[in-house]
Length: 292
Image 1 (cartoon, one colour):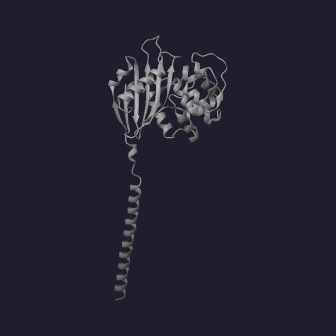
Image 2: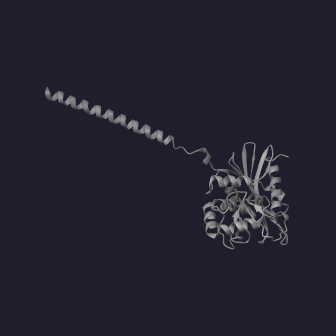
Image 3: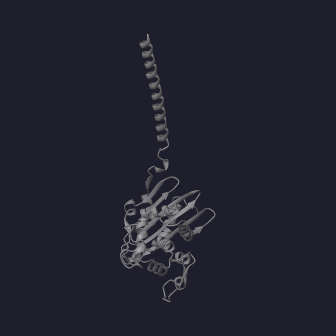
């Protein structure tokens, strides 16, 4: 009788232990399930839609050209000539945007109102022939101001930030005061758009103050219905000549980042940033992002 009771007691203990183990396993499984449910990828990581618009070629009037736009809210790209959108060209004065940030971040200039004195050299553009601030130099695309800025920054720091930004091919070979005009630096229209997206999202390796200052001084138009920020570029010191206009349009609660590049088909012809800007505005109107 004693052994029977002991056996029954042992059986009961085993059953109890198994039930406790089962509860612990269920709790572990539940915790794992909860942890897994918290790591579901965000929908914003979805692959963007890509749309090709060959009909936009009419705005280039026979010139070789490219146009790319990224629609932030709808996560989509619109391109004319996707092959050329991925091809790298010298950035010319569009490089003034990162150049300005590098100057501010390194402390070479303290703010957008810092004056660099005109040295008396006569230029073809009357607006260049006077003292300049960073703000006026961006607005009037004053090359000599940014050349002096780059000289003061120096090659080592310039290269550091070009690498940190991953700007185009990151090649600043050539004179430190003109590598973006006639040196080794190259960038594609696609890369220009990605750079502008990072600037807008405050995702560049610069302080918030630096990015805020530059975003403010590149505003070109401000109306009741939209704000247009950007920079032109005219590559006249290399062949073929290239015209650039890059920027972003804020309107109706959305942001459209874009880059236009074109090449003058006439070997002796010029390609200007102003022409690229006009092409861009015509396309933005065609796409109904800007309304007359």
